[in-house]
Length: 428
Image 1 (spheres, rainbow, N blue to C red):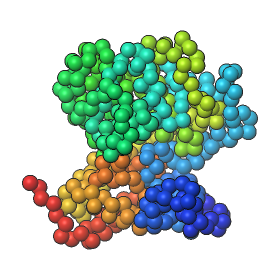
Image 2 (cartoon, one colour):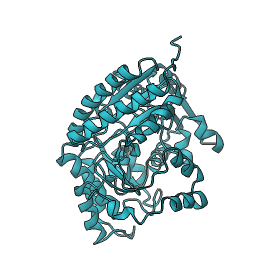
Image 3 (tube, rainbow, N blue to C red):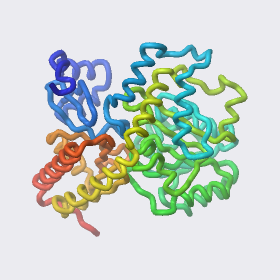
Image 4 (tube, helix red, strand yellow):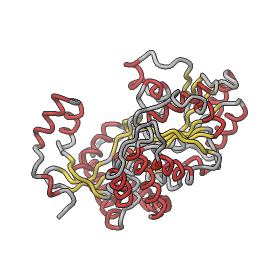
């Protein structure tokens, strides 16, 4: 029996859709209808099961599932905590949080020794903004195409007008510069010496899998140090093995003042994020234990998930597996695009298991997403770049899973080419 098939008979797909429209997001329901109206009811490894018993390969999930769905190590940790002490008082100390903090510190770059846990990446960004302000850094700098969340503070450094404009005014004192442009960043920091905090992703995931030029991360660290700017490296999507390394910033030996983690941190089971800082940066929160708090910060169930996730990544060698799988998948995707979509100005970019397929025409992005779903694969369109389809499969893939993904991507690309035979974009 396929995982989840025992529960599919109890799901009324039409009623789920109606409830979304009445009680939740009618927009989500309309989008689901465009993609076939599927209702996901179960998951295991790299696979989803829908209410009609269909199995779909999950290369989506916004980077959460580096360990795959329901990894047994994570499940065991969470189940143990669930049956003993799932929620703390926030008054007494609690051992699961201490274990999670030590586990996380064991895999973070040296010098990052303190952590504040939260439930989402945007909360981790908000914590970083607060730490910056407490440290006297009141001018925020982020990169065009960067994505750091959608709460008001995080949205202020998520440089996309479509997300920002409906909610203005946002935080004052924010500058955006081009990703990869050290000179533009330097010019801003020159105007705000000792007052700036820079937000940077090693690879822009929601920006369309934008990979910076060699040396860029190191140059950003150097210019931040020169102008006494705080550096926040957002690895909410890229960290914990997604790029084939524990952290993308480690590729150039960069140690930020603050490192953000999330998504995969909860092992695909419990939403958890973290703001990890140097002793010097974090010390301002030691003065008052209730200055920055959250009811569910370091909740025992989430902390168990952190311990399980880090154990699973370590014990299964998932960082190294992500690197090897990326070395296999990216060239195959590039070959397929060259063979099937040569006239459609399509490019494949990737690092580890963060892979983007970039079309000059966003309409073809939607065509590819629909063709993938028709071939039992689900991926994401990048939130800050609607012409890029993004693949973030687990690092737990078996050889049969890899072959399935390559074969179905090739089928989907062929269908896009067939449905758009005369679709050429000028290179001018």
